[in-house]
Image (cartoon, rainbow, N blue to C red; front, side, top):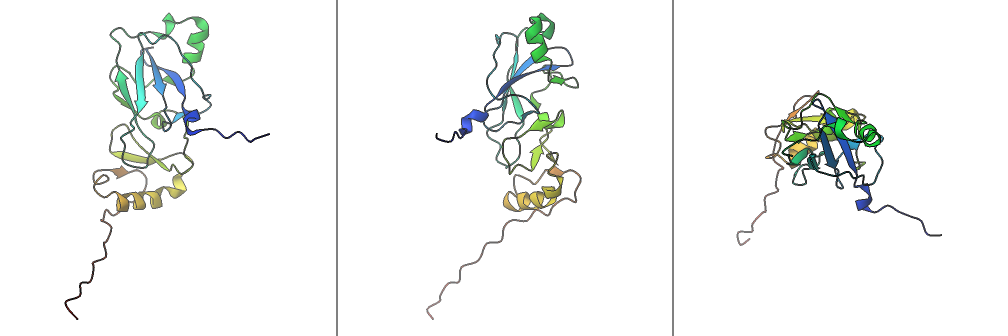
Length: 185
């Protein structure tokens, strides 16, 4: 019997969350977005009419867990109480009671709940403010050296970032070795 290895796309997950107003959003993790701890892999689907849609920022140049960005805002948001009881129970598993989807263009799930991340190398995440970098829970020990490496390797992209809980890393460009030129010797 051949071993079964999951493909990268198998990490794609769809899940729903409810905000403080009772409105429902659907989150598509793609291959990189964090997902609530315990969410199953796979796609769950309900009629998308009235749902806010969020997807991870695929253009994030830094090796950090991506922020979810809102891609669709419904004219008339669906309230969780409008769903059938079985679906309502599924959707209410992931409450984001301190957020309002209508006002939240960007959401970093790691700021609001325990999440699973797909990359074993992941150490940090960028907060929804776009300026604060925090360690993924359980990765605090590696955070300071990660921040140093990040600032060294991405000096321009990290120039305005603040790293929480550690001394701010020096932001110096990588030194480049100068070429020696022969002057006819």
